Structures are given as C-alpha cells and as structure tokens.
Image 1 (cartoon, rainbow, N blue to C red):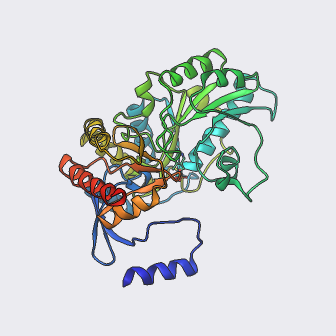
Image 2: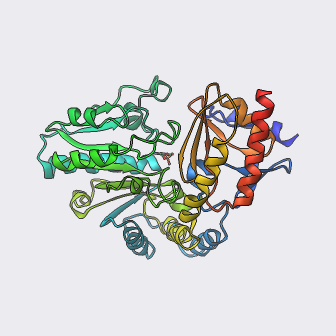
Image 3: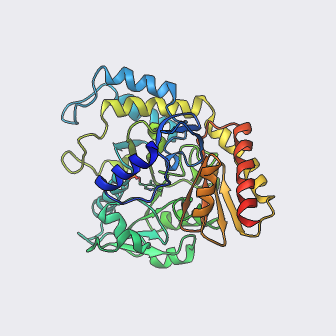
Length: 399
Ligand SMILES: *Cc1c(COP(=O)(O)O)cnc(C)c1O
C-alpha cells in the first residue's frame, strides 16, 4: 500500500510535531480530496478554514499561474505592482484604513503585538517596556515563542520557555475580569471572537460589545484574531459582526489566500498603523506579488461566489440536523455558520477515525470536540451526504 510506505518515510525523516489522521492526500478539488490509494473523501476541516474557497479553486489557480510567470518576489526593498491593489481591496472589503501584509497567521499576530505595544508607548504614553496586553484563557494565536508564552495550554508551552513578559490572562467571555485586568499600562486586549482551536467556543452574548466599550473608555486597543473565524466562516465576513461591535484592529490569514499561498494581514486605523516606520518591522516575503495576486483573487471569490451567504444559510440547517441526533454521547453542539463544534462526553478521536473510514475528514480539537468546518463552496446535497455518514458513525460506535 502506498499510504503505509509514505507514512513510514515521513515518520522516519520528518519531525513528529503533528498527529495526523493516516490519510495521504494527493489531489483535491472543491470539497473533495483523493488519497494515494485512489479513495475519495469529503474535507470537513478545510485546512482549519484556509480553504474556505474550496480546494484548487480554478480562479485562484489561474491567478497564481498568471502571476508566477511574471514576477514572484521583489522583497520590500523595491515596490511591486500587485501590492497597491491588494491593500486597497482589503481595506475596502473590511472597512479598515490601513493594512500590513505578512505570511503566516502567527506573524500577523506578532505584527499586532508590536503595533499595540508601540502604539501604547508612543500614542498612549505608557512608560518604556511597560506595555501590557490582555488575552483570554484557552486562546490560540499561533506557535511563536512569544505567542505560546501567553497560551494556557501546557502542551503548547512545555519546554519552550523562558517566555516574553507583558501578557495577562482573563477567562474568555468575562467582561468583569477584563475591567479588573485593565490598568494604565494596558495597550491592548487580544481576543478570538470565536475560539476555534479551543473547540468552537462562542463567548457569552454581549461580551464583545462590553469589551469594546471598556476598551474605548480606558483607551485600550481591542484586537480581534479572525484568522480562523473570519472571511466568511461564521456566515459573516467577520465573526465580530454577530456581536454588533467593531474592533480597533483585526488579524486575518488562512482563507485570505484560499489555501494557495501563505498570506496574512494586520488591519487597523491610520493612527495605529502609522506607528510603524521604515526599518522597525518587515518580512522578506510579506506583500510579495505572487501572494498579493492570489489574495486579491481569493477575496473576490469569497464575495462574488456568495460563500459568506452560503455559510450563513447552510450552517444553521446542518446544525439543526446534528442537534436532532439522539445520541447520548453528545454533550453540546455550538456554532455559527459552517463553524460547528460537537462536544462529546468522551474522546472524539475514534469518531474522527470512523468518519474517515466513511469518507468524511474531520479532526478532533481539544480531546472531546469534533469540529465541522467544510469548505464554504459546499452544497446542501453534499452536506446531507456527510450528515448521513455522521449519523452512521454515531450509531455504530454507540450501538
Ligand atoms: C491558525 C491560527 C493562527 C496561526 O496561524 P498560522 O498560519 O498557523 O501561523 C492564529 N490564530 C488563530 C485564531 C488561528 O486559527
């Protein structure tokens, strides 16, 4: 079997920093992937929402090919002709005044941290090296040493210290704790409007609105990490729109390039973005023409193919079907749009493995939660196909 051989090679020569399902994918299109043994599966993870536009979207492939044949990288030592349109388009789409493009999500989070601290020192007047950022328990913002330093998940941190100081953790969704944590040195509150990795956690209604009011009152930047929840996943462009508030800054990544190329970005006001001056931040690949061409097209696909509306329409329909399942292992089902977490009273891994054997690819998150987050190009018929398999797996595993 090709699968076993490839897994053996990867395990011998590659680092073991993941625990993937044992499927080796060789090609994909839309919501479907095919493995090296020719089996077909429906992708219900969408690369953690990086392929909201579906795998190998033909428009993105065309944009990538077209740009790759012209120029791929100039570095920011010179300008390129794709960056201006990207900047204008993402600002017009999101309503923010300025953007700073990076590559991975973690880099865009680091950019947000640097912007917030420098804004704190230069605009708010916090003493040098005293700026504090408030974050939430169970956060996931990436894997750099600074970012894992303020994680509350031991597995993300053990062995990697010492960590960057200047972060305070409050419980997710607790406005009182936020109020208490803010002091004269607080420059920002960094929060995921829906916590994806923690198990599709949705904060108590009104929390983000209260948080925004508190931040405004105390002159603190509210920064939303929408890397996973943004760009249509929850049935709105941004998950914060469900809460009737607007952050001072937002971080995007993943679906920004539809899975073709790492592109992330930090978006904010002129006041915040202008704290950056030449030489104080950058990235060799950030804002490169290939990434910019792909990201421009990926945003257009999201809007023109009405993928955000599709998530808004099909998400509740699918969640209602899941909620109607009679199985006793199901503790809770929560979600927004096609961003759904099914919490079990037992480990979710065996369910994900059984689902894979039925042709549906899901990945457990935090032991007990199955995350359902298919590409947003999915249709009702395909969702129904997947639902029947979910039902079958629950029946089988629970008798
Ligand atoms: C995936 C993710 C990140 C990190 O993005 P990378 O591209 O993996 O560095 C940060 N925040 C959230 C909410 C994410 O889901």
